Length: 290
Image 1 (cartoon, helix red, strand yellow):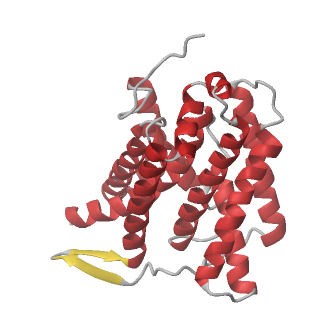
Image 2: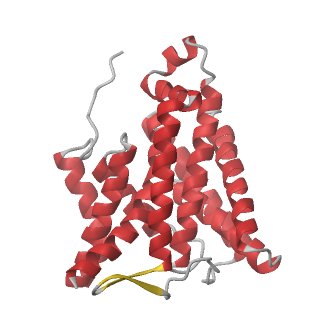
């Protein structure tokens, strides 16, 4: 029993970690916590749903179109909401992203309505595969594990060896120095939001496959993914993934032993981590000198 709970928790936690990575990428580059991340993934998932159900295209084509939409959406939000802001405070950034969140939620409700819908996903939640005696995994869980591993490998190689990845790391460390070195900071921010939106959209489609699709369906997954990011450390992408895995295990065990406590586990984790170790388990706390 405990093995099955841990495996299922790891699967859900991998999805939390994947979505948390989308949040962490923006934070690492620009120190902005994007509270519109969940709704960006939500509206991208609605686009996939619309293409699949209205135009009856194959899933792989709908997936490609949705990822293209997610990239454009991320760049559009950065260009229209963040870039015009002149030296906003942290609170200002929070208000801007919350405004984008409300706008996207209202748009989804206006276009697709508030009714709950089933998202036709490629991987089944019901179809099980036995991986060891007494432990089974569904196709959804296997897909999450494989996708998380692939994205982590890609991000490691991207940030370590690509010129754009190095430019993003330099921008995160010191924006003014990056500008002096000839890095086009605005372009870096735009690409960062595009990458974040893409990863968030993929994770949101996985979340929709195991629940229902409506304009509010990403609110709880976002809070749990944010808790995972806080737990692991927003400045550490590997830490965010580990935090997601830990969050999934903690939530799954609490949900089994004390079901009534499951909805508040994420908030408890956030409060405890911020109180004891604000930088998270795998990230160093530092103070910028001016």
